[in-house]
Image 1 (tube, rainbow, N blue to C red):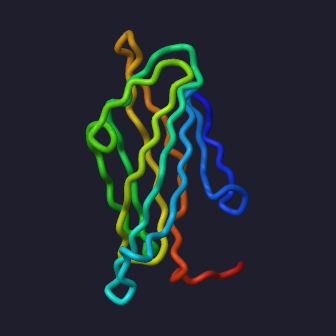
Image 2 (cartoon, rainbow, N blue to C red; image 1 turned 135 degrees about the horizontal axis):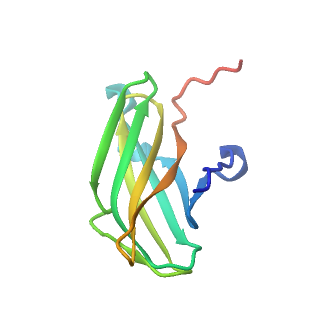
Length: 143
């Protein structure tokens, strides 16, 4: 298993992790038109690209997210597949989807994992890199 690596948001506005030749890249963005800061509702979208850089066909069967808001409160989300699908990725194929997350604070962090199966029905876990959810309403401090 390869350790996740991340690019900084200043470099690419995306975060990438590779596990067992499955590359996951996440690009989040703030949705001001769906957010209501006066009511402590900040909505974010994130686009995920999953690329099979390996030599075996795999299928994404489940997801597990940990979403932490700016006050340190964490919500866990588990479920089958992603956006109602359980995509199969042959070597060289990719799957891209966009989903969203509302937060009660102007910033937060998401991290997670995908549960995958090989063609031989061997399960394995793929890391989803930790990524920041930041709105223009977030207070920035330098240390």
